[in-house]
Length: 372
Image 1 (cartoon, one colour):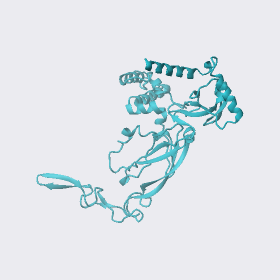
Image 2 (cartoon, one colour; image 1 turned 60 degrees about the vertical axis):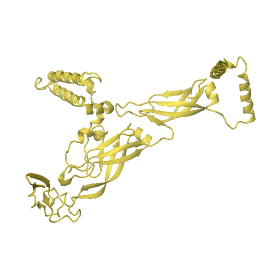
Image 3 (cartoon, one colour; image 1 turned 90 degrees about the vertical axis):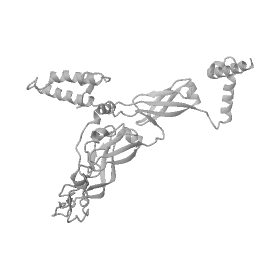
Image 4 (cartoon, helix red, strand yellow; image 1 turned 90 degrees about the horizontal axis):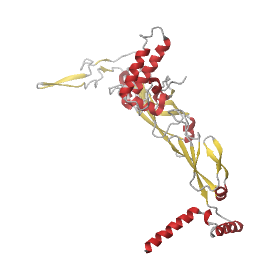
């Protein structure tokens, strides 16, 4: 079931300021609060909906993400162990870097990783699941990240007594430093694990399945929470950021959700009109060319572009027709064009080439003015 628009839930415009958002939330929260509507499940659900909308729109970063990507920026799904699939829950993590990046203010948190991936335009339009292998530091399965040989455990550091820090006195001052014996860990591994040699983590290639949503564009990032390197001493994993780049297409150019292409047409169709076939990412479609079409004319074909990540609506396809000059003419064709050209030279032929006449009239006036 699709969610309602957050702005509609609060009854405000998309240009509402912070004060208007808070005022709308307060008014609706009082009306639908469960304490004011005991036993009313519909009011309780409405209150939750109002609260959710407020928490997003009252946060500048979350609001910016919602305005660009809609509900897809916040959807969640579960993760597996070795071969995981990421959905929209972690998409466009660059928008939320300031929020999620401050979850763990500790150097023991696993390192964030970045993976650059190139996609074709066809893959982006349809959406696709890609499997990648990335080299990471993962928790040692033999010792389960303890660093000690199975059946043994680490002991408290005798130098710092498990604190990880020691105090050094220098005259009247006491300076706290990282313990040189345990290097700040507070514990000493007496019997290291045979696999990781006490390092708690091992290097490995990890297979990750990434679901690429339809409509994603160059420069967007997909953030996979907890799919970076393992943290030290049981601390959380880092995140994996997948940087998107769209390969150059041999027919189409993309601008936001619209596609552009150039279509050559011959001189006769441009003059007399006709019907041509143009390519789209869904197959060929027919395009009617009116008579007297000039080169560079732009034709719009609706709903043949790229689906928006924000609202699911498709962009359009714009076809720019290029009138092609005929080449390798035979004698008969040259004679026909010669007769056509001669017909433009008389008084009645001027109306057939208005742009040429206008241009040369301007040129003539320009030189006449120079002589004055």
